Length: 149
Image (cartoon, rainbow, N blue to C red; front, side, top):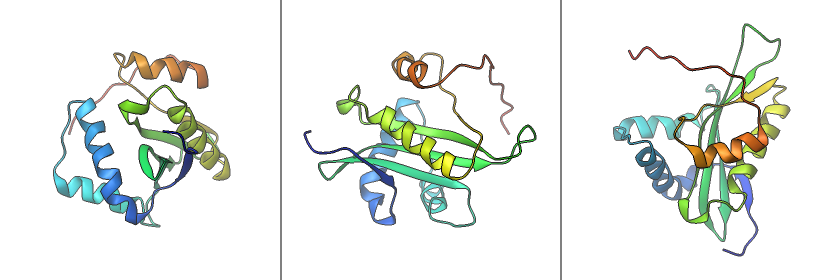
């Protein structure tokens, strides 16, 4: 790939190019979702009543990554927080700055929304991603707990 890397908002017409990345992301985490969940997820990105947003990385007319994030209130801050829920870069092009550029795009969007923080989680075994994350963010030392419903 030799063209300019562009970080931009996801568009409805990107669905056919976004879907293979989404499927690869889910496979990376050993997950699969029913088609109606994926349909709902994609639709939320374009619903003005939803706090969910998506950026994509495009290079040489190809989508090579995405970042999904949401803005939410916090009891600990006057302004909203930005949760970076999903970040994925095509494994064939990793290590070239796409993940960093997507994080920067989310950070810019969070600043524009007057959010007071951007945060995310990753699996402790995802060492490759942590190499990048340790360069662009601090680890607050919290451990996540879940109750599955």
